[in-house]
Image (cartoon, rainbow, N blue to C red; front, side):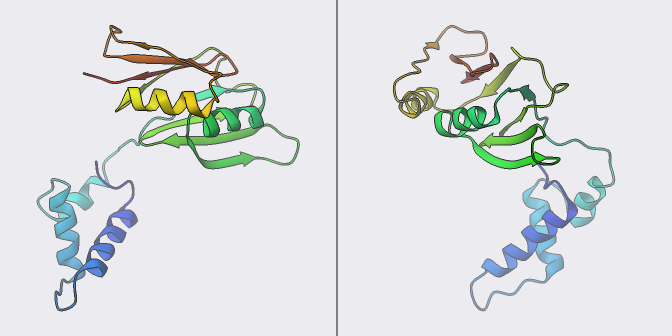
Length: 173
């Protein structure tokens, strides 16, 4: 996966140069080429050409929620997601909350037209048994999801959030 912006790629090259031990010198151009080769490109010219191509970032499913404080508590305290951003046009207006855990990102929206209650999101997961234990502890024992070991795609743990949205955490095999 390439850095999302050309500035992020340049920042990686600067970080590489900054992390070198004393006495090891690298020009910025050499650092850019090293970053490019690490990402599977021949050189900086080939990588930078990719930024001129149409491209997409990872999708973010948007789930409808009716109480942002309850959603925040469930997704952060129970599921151990991190808040990436929060947006509200002005006080008293609906909130849109972006949360993530690892590479999985979800939008939680109080806006009437966003999402449909009862949506399903499939989340690939490593160490599903460990995550299940974490969720059970985070919910203080009030949530005890099972793992369907024979689910299509691999063992799957289904959790329904307080708004009826279904999260299927699957450990692909």
